Amino acid sequence: MRKLIESTFMTTNGVIDSPQDWSGPYWDDEHSAYSQALMENIEAQVLGRVTYEGFAEAWSQRGGDPFTDNFNAMPKYVASRTLTEMTWNARLLEGDAAEAVKRLKQEDGGDLIKYGTGEFSKTLLEHKLVDEYHFWIFPVLASGAKLFDNLAVEITHLELLGTTTFKSGIVVHKLAPKA
Image (cartoon, rainbow, N blue to C red; front, side, top):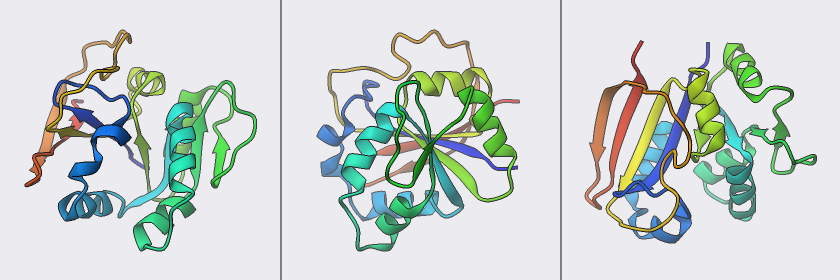
């Protein structure tokens, strides 16, 4: 059975809005190495509509290095109630999004990764479909939507699987829901 891994950038005060505006100065060799290692067993991406639209616009214009070429080429599964057409090697999750992800996890193959956090993340959390979280905490303070802002989330205890600290000040907490 495949794992679903969620990878989310956030500021020290929990803001997840517009990471393209505040994360750039911290993208260095350590950041790249961690990102590449995280993608080693990943076969496909699972994305919410907002993340998909932002990523498709930004990433489809890039290429020429192994990480980016792999990132662009891998299949993407998108949860959306409004999109009807897809680009960037993506297709819509059919029917109930949680059930569709559950089916994807039961297929043979490499793991799945989900970027970004929002309403779709709450759905996955409620249905206990996320196997591992990678919360990237950047040494930045900002205004904006916070992690699980305005979403009623049941208490979910997480087990710390590891912490990685970069010289830039980024700290990645790798966590899994406790059984």
